[in-house]
Image (cartoon, rainbow over all chains, first blue to last red; front, side, top):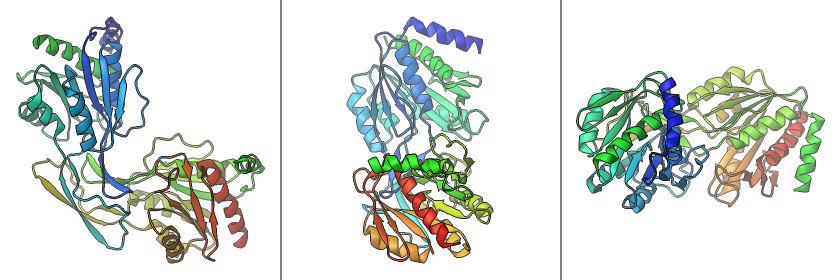
Length: 231
Length: 231
């Protein structure tokens, strides 16, 4: 904890000066009709903390945000989106202009095949919703990336490290922040996380429980190292 | 607008002294798995405004709230719930102890038949979710009510008055607040509403666009009259 405080104070050294960072945050919402929608548990706090910390450390930051109840961090350009397709477009528009991408949004994997124009009336005792896959933004960036550092997030409920290693490789990530959301103090909407940082080399950094701003700074410390490896 | 202000100032007359009011607010969330859920668009602002105004006017208020990003109104007992079934239980537990019920929550009509214990992996390009009906809390209260005044809310996207009249009759309501969410200034998350108050007699009060606290006070003005009719 003392290290975290020192870390945070040291962050005034603006060691991200000159970097251009894109951060995604929050859930996406996938409408069933004008009233109902499918979404993911995500407060957006983690992504907002990363964007805030990156800006404080001197980076130029664009934050692509799903619907959340948070104030925009000072000095950060915020672009608000609702659906995964909107997030996809916003991210793709800006990808070539940034050198670092931190994808903390909980993008919905599936969306309803059909969105009704009018509120569906509840005449039937059961209802079946056909879903189809949304674009996998992170995997797409992994295919496109050239000089960029690409960092993903994963909320897992089982086999954390195993699932994380598979994702790092399959999506061509430079780092994955894996969060076991079943642990106390690591779940959705909490102010703390218990994360493991997983790298393609097989290196794994297991962090203790810490607040999201401290975790954001740990992630950005690794980003500094990863960026140096690309130069 | 001036009338609204006067209305609000006059509300200091504590004309709801001695009344015991239950208010529901916000959406409910219906889990698909630990990460994904189905929900309804609802900020909870309307119900919180009703609870706040009722308490200011002297009522004893219990607010059964789905997940929202709002501060509890002063002097109101708040009970937090997530699913429609939890809201059903919380409402039923307290129904016999109150004389007025204002159901502004956007309760999900349907919930997934099966909630997965682990996060569903996105191996398949499509996914089908089977939904079944949640209990209709408002209709159930309509069947049970004795001396209580029962007020419902409806968000409609078409045939507002027709749908509202059907609901008032079928659910045995004393009043329905019908909101055309397709109108500008009346949609979800806005700070204003454009409401029609629909009564079983066929009386309809069409209100202009107004902020939610003003609408809350109009509703409570009608509650005072409706309660007198029950004595």
